[in-house]
Structures are given as structure tokens and as C-alpha cells.
Amino acid sequence: MWGEATPLSKTVSKALVREQKTIGPMVKSLIIEAPEIAKAAIPGQFVHLRVNDTIAPLLRRPISIAGADREAGTLTLVYRIVGQGTAMLAKLQAGDMVDCMGPLGTGFDLDCERPLLVGGGMGLAPLLCLAQALCPKPVTVLMGGRNREELFWQELFAEACRHTHITTDDGSLGRQGLTLDLLPELLAGGQFDRVIACGPKPMLAGAAKLAVEQKIGCQVSLEDYMACGVGACLSCTCAGTDGKRRKVCTDGPVFWAGEVFSL
Ligand code: FES
Image (cartoon, rainbow, N blue to C red; front, side, top):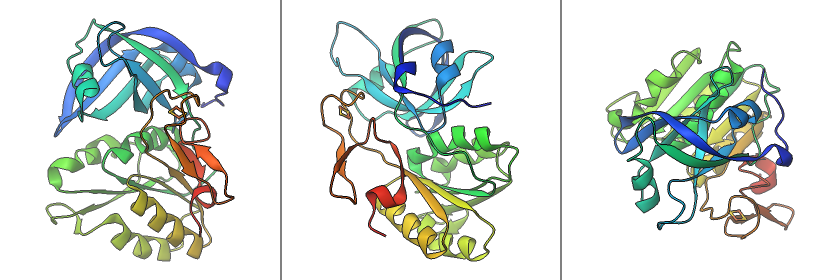
């Protein structure tokens, strides 16, 4: 049973690293003990990690929650090594401690029966948590990546999803092309009551437009640069369709598509 997170449910704690392993090209899976956060988290939220209190880089790194085991009190975090902060994270081993703040941000609305999850690249991380939460509902996932090596996600989603559709840029796995090339075909079948997308912004905008054309509700999870993660620094704002600015870290990262895309 997944609860409803509130701003007050945010916790800062020292979390024990249970396991860290490489699961894809420059992609790591990190399991940490954070019982309070695992209990409060809902799919779509993220944590802010800091490896070391005294040595640069001091900023925390926002990492999507890819899984939460409430009984074991653990979080699974999947991230790509893209800079100094994540390179430091990648050095953590079982038994090390990491400073963890969360759960942060908004989560996905789980009130749907036949969802289609659309993810590109690391955007698949929060969708994995969502697929697990929605299971045993009939979840379908459409995942895209540059090549076969980047679609290690297929195995991770296998248990929670009834159907998996894949696109790769080079055609080495699934259909050659982008997720947006295959999406109209899937939506035309009429079997989905929600589209939930996470990945590059053009993909989100395209998925939202196609969903609206089919009169299907759509949620998107935005990826943005974040510094504070708690609404204080304004480094992550984006324009809302009502003309007001939105903070991706606290108003999102999950939005109803019409809040951030003109449809
Ligand atoms: Fe500071 Fe969003 S990251 S306001």
C-alpha cells in the first residue's frame, strides 16, 4: 500500500549502503537503508544524496527513487555517472554511509486502471517504481534508448509489466526509431486510460499531445537541474501554462501535462 507524502514527511538521515552494482553503461543501482523515507515515498519522488559533508562537491545530487521496499526499509536508486558528484557516489560500497534527504517532490497519481508508461533513458528510473506500485494492474511500458546496451531496463520491468514495447535509435533492439514513432500506434488501440511519461522534454511534449488527441489523461515527470531540492534556490523553475513559474523540485517533478505544456 503506497501512502501520500506530505512536505512534512521529509527526512534527512545517514543511510547505510547495502549494495551498489553496475547495471548498464555508466549506470549504477544503489540500495540504501532509509526506513523512514522508504515508508513515506510514493513513485515519482526523489531523494537528494550527499556523499561527503566536508569535501567538495558540497551540493546534493537529486536521484529518482526506482524502488522502495517498506518491509526491508530500503530504497533502490538508479543513476547515471555524469559528473564529479555522481562519480563520488559510484565509489560507495556496501557498509559505507551516505547522507540522504527525502522523499522530495510530487509523486504520480496512481488512480488509473490501464496505464501506458513511456520512458526514455534515465527517465525509466521513476517509472520502474511506478510499475511496481501499480502491479498487478495491467501495466504496459514503452521504452526507448540509443541501442540494445541502454535497454538493460527491459529485465528490470519484466516482473511488473504485462507488455513491453521497445524502440532503439539504431534498431539493435525492438523497433528502430523513437518512442514517439511507436506511440500513436499503441494509443490507437484504445486500451489505455492514462499515459505517464518521463524522459527528454521533446518526448514528454509529444507524448502529452498524442495522449490529449486520444482524450487520455497524461502525467509527465520533468528532469531539470536542481541545487537545493526544497524550493529555496529557484534553480529549477519552468514556465507553467497559466503564466506562473513552477519549481520542478517542489511543485513537480510530476505534473499533469496541461500544467506545463500547451496542448
Ligand atoms: Fe532549488 Fe528547486 S532546486 S528551488
